[in-house]
Image 1: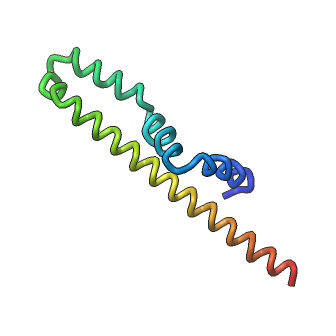
Image 2: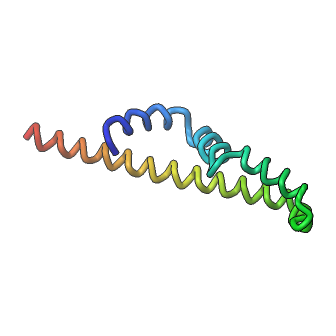
Image 3: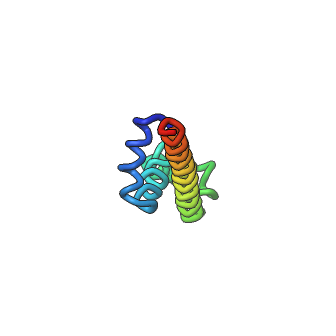
Length: 98
């Protein structure tokens, strides 16, 4: 993680885990919530997909679970990289001082 990314991550993580998961995971997952809405509207107009359109609630729940999963995975991987950078900086500073 670069210094710029680390500073950006500091401001993002200050807003909290759930804020990140909801915004970056649920709302911006893949092509975003708008893609889900457009997909559902398209399914309603498609005669071949009529049987799938009755499962729109399952699709919404699946989309939300996928978004929360993606957001959580992204949060934890970013947090891991950030903490690794902090450890590297701390060990590097200790060597420079000694």
